Length: 151
Image 1 (cartoon, one colour):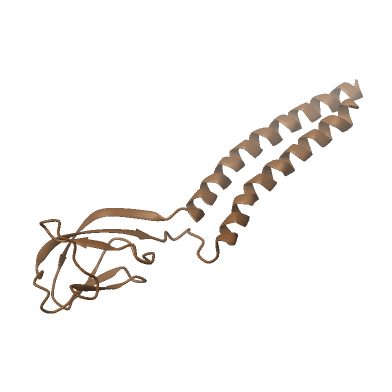
Image 2 (tube, rainbow, N blue to C red):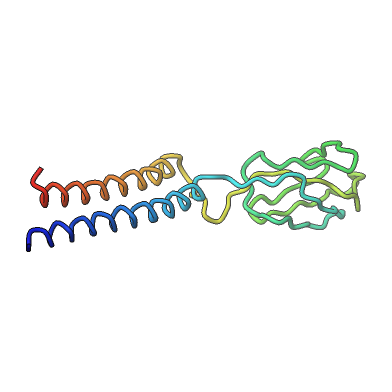
């Protein structure tokens, strides 16, 4: 009877470990995806004013990812028509560029708040976190089943 209760307890524990492991692996996977994926904004509307910094929705833009078009879809030229502040997400129209008070469309990539900057190896190591979590859950389950049922 005691042996049967122990086996039933192990079966329940294994079920709970698998259930919680699958729930937590989904949460961990979502967090890892967010930490390794750049954000993208396409055709955000902004009205640029001469020598006035205009803030866009997102800040912390990636290098060479900002494209600005005027109303007739003509691409404006960086350093000739406008300047950018990547870190703060601002565009400043330069004096004499001829595009003042015009509606513009801005497309860019940015680093979301959860994104892990730095070397690519940091993001790879984070990706392995989920793998090691799943391996740990499997070792726990296999160990308990093996010890209880004498495999």
